[in-house]
Length: 207
Ligand SMILES: [Zn+2]
Figure 1 (cartoon, rainbow, N blue to C red):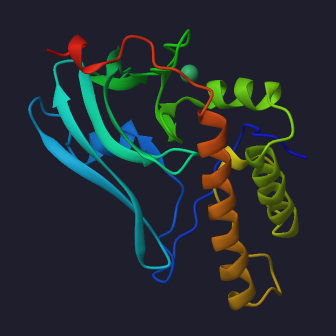
Figure 2 (figure 1 turned 180 degrees about the vertical axis):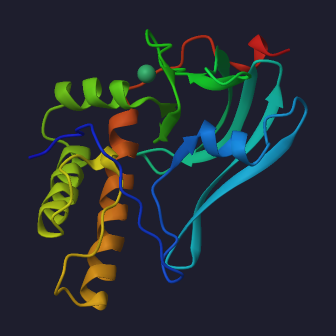
Figure 3 (figure 1 turned 120 degrees about the vertical axis):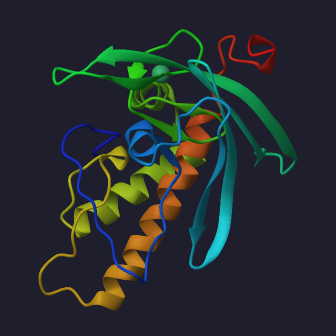
């Protein structure tokens, strides 16, 4: 089993598949100039043409407020509304670049990408929670995703992004495996993140 892994990222895009598991990349937000204070935008994720998740983002000074609904493991919907702090570092070529501070309890790491399950957290939080979990649905989903990664000759570890189609594999087969992979990754992250709590990143902190 590859676990969550770390290392290179590959990106694969075609017109037919825009599916992805949920992650927030602050570099993309910067490129799209979304981080102006008081700006609001939403992020949506779809699978096989159907939206399966969306969040609203409100930009404040040095923080963003995330709002979304998420279905709990018992099937009930829960509303989430909390802030993720933003920190800045100087760029060598001038200017400054933003980072998320991971909102999971006891973390606060400075990261470019937060991964979504029930709450958004950094790769390291997922790794730690993953290591300490016993045989659960999330664990099985992770393993099944990793099996597909092996078949596709992708780098092990579900947070390592998507790779390319292996030579000689039919596109239909590839797309089927690709979609299954994304669903397993999503289930895995949802299950693992059940263990996370938020530090103080509640809406009170913003008001
Ligand atoms: Zn973290």
